[in-house]
Length: 191
Image (tube, rainbow, N blue to C red; front, top):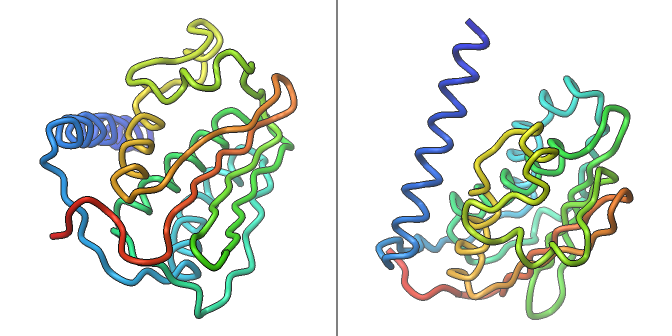
């Protein structure tokens, strides 16, 4: 039953990602902006990833976030970005590794960082990983699963919030994915 449920969830995630990409590329997706508590959001995201991390023997470090730290964003879309980044970090980190979420506020924006000590990404591949359906090192990466949609979706969602996303990584030493979002009202449209 667990295998069937997991396969069903994986298929649902692929369909959701394809629908998101289609909507984003056609401009049909609008942001539903609200004030988002980063403490509540990070707690929710980390709780949902905890079982996966524990099952893989990976330590999941959680940020210390003030109750008052908020930003204006589309909560569900921001949650999807964090789930994509944390899911990838867990996927590409070996047993015994560690994954951390950091949240760093500045006066104008919020910097979210997902850091791992996994397999890392070669410098020449770091820009390409945000392309649709692209997976680096087809043979090795296919071993980890996925369709190459999560980072492309995340990039579109971050840019819809007028933010930016990038990676710093070294092959064999891990990766840190950064998302910078404005603290105030952002986005090209609100619903």
